[in-house]
Length: 257
Figure 1 (tube, rainbow, N blue to C red):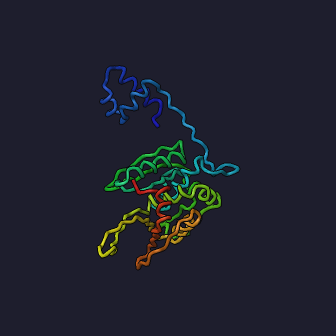
Figure 2: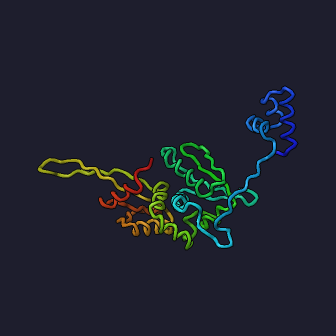
Figure 3: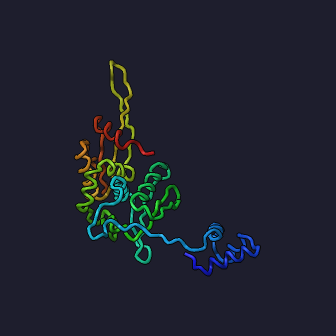
């Protein structure tokens, strides 16, 4: 936020015939800002909507379905960090191979906190979809020091109610972060001839036993059959391979995009 004296000086220099570029360099202000000050010099007062969790009677987020999806993304590939002056940064890091998921994450962040800016920080092979707010810890009480798999992850009753009402959005967020849909294949002998068969299945992998239980518990509620794979590593992989369950997942989640 630039003070009024800086704005007045910039507009005055341009009025004297100086170019936008030279004034921008001298004052360290973007040309876009100077153009906007020529139309309106007074700063616009922005009033954000109050946090629904900080009211006298706390309520759910404005868009519960978007929140359920964002909760899944956060538990998989998200983090919240203290920024400055009580402001927190919500960041979800997603693979560039799935631009549709990056768009969906940005849309969910905007839906949950409509008045907060959302931006993308491009990194090698991935994008960090980021938004700042004082209220991310209110909305995601699972935030805490250290790694998620090293601390308890338990949903608050109001979060549980949202997930129960929007289970598929929650499952989709978890799959879009730490899951995948792949095509397996096998061969069978049919009438003396060996034929190849392909079949899809879903996987979800996470190191937090609590997050895995949240995922599988939600699968149980929507009628998905699943099993865990035997692995030597610390992470747990959940497999969904039954034909009816895969068809149900395809109808509500689908491949990454």
